[in-house]
Length: 227
Image 1 (spheres, rainbow, N blue to C red):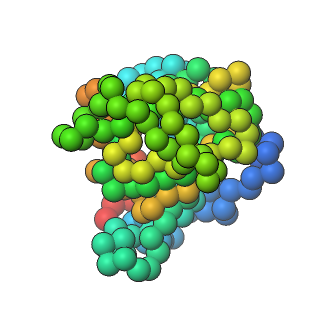
Image 2 (cartoon, rainbow, N blue to C red):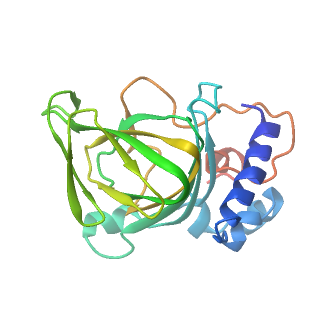
């Protein structure tokens, strides 16, 4: 994925987010040089910031997701059961743009349609080995109301609606009728180890550096900033 395209997606995404009255935190707009100079552990170590992914498949418009991690706790706190146990993201799923089938081992999450089109989720329960159970009925809470769907059923969320996905629940999602602004409130987020995909696929983009980065992505931190 070309860096120039990532820069364009960031600009478009920021404008889309602002159109709903959501304003990003100040560090979102730091230049790469500012971020490298300040190197705040609360941002770099927690992997807060921009995350534009095509899952390494080079087809962002068809297979991809825009994410920004706003806050994130620590795995050590989660294991102790006290401290900062939560995370928050703002995301954009474009019309008919697939975020592929996956599950989480640790993370529980509320996925919220914050505005735009419908958010469509395809859902499966896990089998005893953690794989996809293609027969089991799916049970998920939606804004405090339990919903039941057949295996592979499509849950459609209008703006304002949400679903709670517990660890193990398989899910893929996309926008229907328009781009969708998505909120995610979850337990501590670890995108390096806690994404199990149905098919062999990367979590982050392979970047061709054809332009200077507008802002660093979380996947840039190790290479551009170091430990």
